[in-house]
Image (cartoon, rainbow, N blue to C red; front, side, top):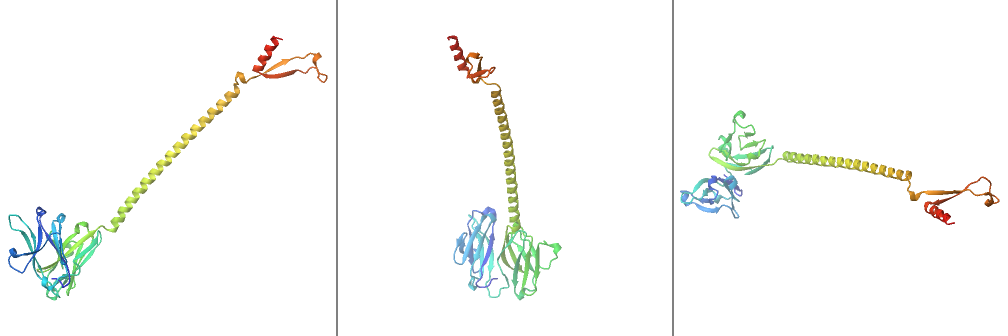
Length: 304
């Protein structure tokens, strides 16, 4: 049951063997399914109706917008079957100002590890009726008033006994995503739950990534430092060796001069006759000549 002006999204599941078959949403005032009036096929959108197929989930969804009293009636989820009767599932939609059963939100979103609350509203006629929260996928239900030991402790139901019962789902997992029903006696209202990646997992993942990057950068810098030290030591050793060789070569050069670089001294004793007036007796004079000049001088003496 829905209030005027509200919207509702209805899931229509089918077997995966019908993935390639055409799906549709139809309405009929009563009677046999053969008289159903097709309102829209899958993947159709208009002002009041959206039909979207989700092959991965093996279902198509129907969203009815801006509901009015005239929208009350029986509808069918249909799957065309060639050479045979179509698959169908009946859905009754009732639009009234004060519905017997409704929800505050037909779609809720939570994060992994977090929690969500769903408020299912009912009229006074259903105060004494059994209230349930059921999952469409496996048709499992949680019932108000059941002991915690008999149900999943992460799903808790509480009833104020007047107008609403509340569903609390905690420790959410990605696998909790799907369609659920608020249910009272033979009435049920669909609610879709989406579970997204939690912040803690996001930051934990980022922290791990940053830590790995930091470790990698540290290792690379360490290797570069070691490489620099090795190159520095090798270069220093090479320079020291080169310096020693240079010093040794210079020493050898100084210790063993070449014949051309040697200077020769030609000594001659002068007799007293040629001694200048200011010359002291006993003093010996020498003239230092390069090897070449010495040879030339000796040659001249031969011809003199």
